[in-house]
Amino acid sequence: MQTFKLEQQSWKDVAAYLESDNRIILPIGSTEQHGAFAPLGTDTYVAKAIAEGAAQETGVLVAPPLWFGWSPHHLVKPGTISIRAEILIEVLSDTIGSLAVHGFENFVVINGHRIVNISWMQIAAERVQRTLGVKVVLFDPAYMSKEVVAKLDFGSIGHGEEIEISHMCHCHPDLIRLDEANDNPHPETPLYRLDPQDPRDTLCYVPATREGLQQVFDRTGDTITGRPSLATREKGRVYHDHLVGRLVQVLELLAGK
Ligand SMILES: [Zn+2]
Image 1 (cartoon, rainbow, N blue to C red):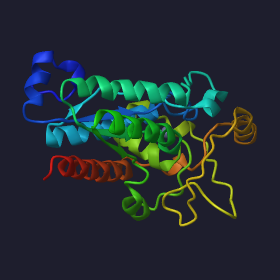
Image 2 (tube, rainbow, N blue to C red):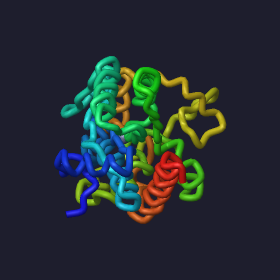
Image 3 (tube, rainbow, N blue to C red):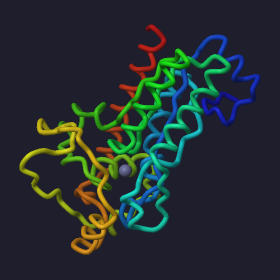
């Protein structure tokens, strides 16, 4: 059986793969609240979907997804699991370190949890590149989709907004209950935004507080930012296909093609 999922291979299959390839994709997301209408695993599902789409086209192996991210603010609602960034640095370093023992050299980390996960991924990536001599590329869907997001007329990045919910409507429509979604449009912030599409994007992000998200809930009846009611399956498909195409390009570059 042809499979690209690492967990479905035997060691013998992996050894054979390593004779002709040294690339692997690591999908990383979170388990955190995404509003009353979307699953806790949203960030991991989207990272996994992009990884598997590109794996189908290229034959590159995909590691089991990491279902945990740094989500202290999302503990405001039940089911959320937040792992400290310090621990996640170690988990990612050890994952790459284990795979490097047998010859994996090129790692593409898919970040399903947006800006919150980027800082600790950068620290782990720098460390393993320096100490193990491997190559690590961070693939962030928000930054890899700027062109297509503008064309799709998506609003700003928020949380549980029309971008990631459209993506979920394409990949896992059975897990989304759009009729239960409450929109919460972004408040206007005069100085800067945290949004790759916005020229005022600053990247200077500090995770919100649990109290801050509680205030959002008290005001709107849910804990999201954005307009999920505008999500559609078709927009999700276009967005997904664009990201898979970009990931295929990244994988080809790593293969020297
Ligand atoms: Zn999310």
